[in-house]
Length: 334
Image 1 (tube, rainbow, N blue to C red):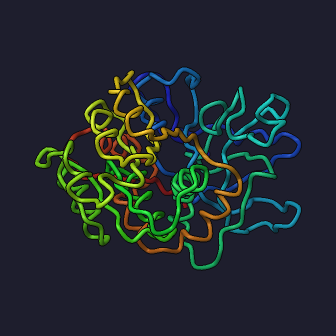
Image 2 (cartoon, rainbow, N blue to C red):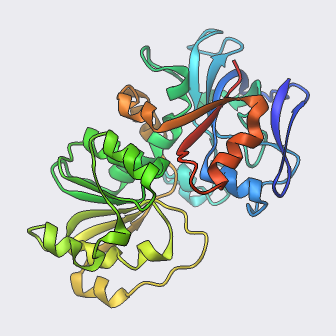
């Protein structure tokens, strides 16, 4: 079967590989679409600590069942919850399998979805509702990240929010906030193409390079700052602004994965008695909710490029080359 294989730092190959082995309790999925995630970019760069070449990457994907499983027939359109938890560590035993002490992922700790077929645990396979395209089915995973960020931290409908960064997760977070009842959402994004995409979806967007971010919250919000500040960028320039933007006893939620340690003016957090929350991936319930709200056409518009699998290198180049305007890039295997 055809697969996109990570072969070492900055080296990909599209090649024929053997069909996946299918352990007991797993099943084959015939892949339709698979998306490139920020984690896949780390793997490609050779900086992911667990991903070892050769590896079929990809944990955002959709497809059809290649065989019957309990409750679903062969040919059912599906997406897959890609987390692999041990089931016996303290987080797993207390209902927090998504932060398992040895959490693994399809496409990192075993072969993933950038291939014509992928083996998946049966209990992680979810049917796609009618009305959601296969392309959007492969976008359920990023949507689930944003659903988890809101549900896990207790977002209250009607509260205002600022989203820092208009990449895949940033724009998806804004769309999910809107679905959860937010009516006052501001997005901060310096890249003109990404800012234009966010604006085309009906969001107010500012350029942080042309805005006094230290004064923005106080000038815009009656409470002196935003109720919720979502960091979807993960860079020092954004970390510098978080505690200025939030109101007294407001909420900062870090969804981004920081690649380098960041410094923070922590006294500002103490003075405002704000809370600071971090989110990692999603629970199964978040994934299920994501499949339901994915019908919002705004999510599909975040997918800027869909390429044939043979153009794997082009897909990664789009996301590692400045100025391309790419947000979510996918490969198709159908």
